[in-house]
View 1 (cartoon, rainbow, N blue to C red):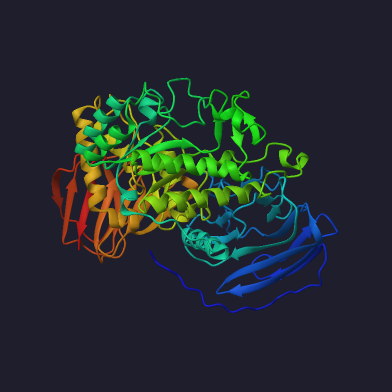
View 2: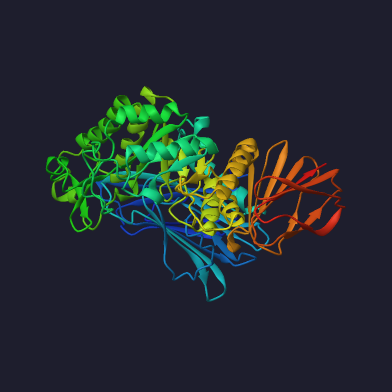
Length: 607
């Protein structure tokens, strides 16, 4: 992936006297106001320029530790060729809201503080990021009707926070006329650098095709079924299985009232160690699901942690542990450590860390933080997850740890090496968009698709389109393999082989997503040897790019032809169907032309 190194030229544009409200001048958005609602707190701010980007460094100070007040950063700037606002929300709603619309939010375990105003030609117009990647930040960004102005308001300390006397954060403003995704990608890297985040080791096995039990089994799993599915999965080229919810309970009601003890339900799996070994002997790695913060009322642990919950959920049947207690953190770490040692598993799917939050009043305040060695919930989660990763890697350095959208981003990369698109069963459009968003902000962390499933009566070429919707991430499958028709298996086998043969370009290459406002109708990624372009919308004009390497054009539309623009005549053009069979050769000339590419298939251009 291309690395950009910025030469730093610091130019102090404003350095005001300390006050509860200050204003600074920027080249990007003009005047910016920074304000604390409490006059006891004093604000300092300065602006520096770095190769076309600007940073606003903000510091607030109180005479003694106290609950921090809301801190706001506000600006307005003319709407000039800025028509969409990208954000990391998996709903992929890339519209331009009115300034009175709903606020965006980010925190350690929810989204990330990056927002990009873009035009209709895939160009950045203004990207905004903040270095605060742990605490919650609310962002109101949109259009003010009076004067057609883009309004920005970033609000810090918007939920209960432990007392402090000093706080620093930095705002990044990027108005460079560059490809929008480059601005987003570099902003994510900037957040990591600002915080000194060190990303979790990513073994190559994190990029292997994967089978998940969730969509087909839900909680009704058995060791016999898992092993039977793994035997089929290995034949197709899958190399990892995630055993999801259900292994720890005989209950099938899809709730979490039995979570917390994390003991294997013998009705599900008779001998976990032997079962894991049997699956590994087939050539698959074995991962297990855990809901990190939940302790259910029917668990033995529920009474043990009485008074150590942030809140209770699901009709009071589930307690959400308070990670500020050291014994809570130790309990969670020890559970995973014991599972790794006892069962020799290869990884963990750690779920629901976004549930570590305060609902309403902070219960610690009434206790004067008694028993808690960390006062901030977000900081405690950060400490917990770092410790989990450290202890697991000490036992097995190549351990796999998966998190799912929304808890992804620069901070979470410290503890996870697999980020999965959030649940969107059967929805190829959502899967595509969520993968694209994750690819921009995840660096070298392995990005995974949401699990694929489809009806067994589906046409093979539509099965291929489901797979192609996920091809720029590691494809996870959750089809019942023993019931899938032979024609579907052939499609799966072909595209799994293709994804692995072209892994360098697809998963490690330079990734370019086009038109997020239209849900990414074209995606592209390239290595030094090849460029792979996938088309998802009919009647798009596809530019094959500079004729300096082999080009693959994947047809994920429902039409049997695509319009392609060629900068030079290929020496050879080959066409392959949805099963990977070569079906034709063609002579293509330089210029714009419509060419027949099978639905669910691809064309290979050799220069």
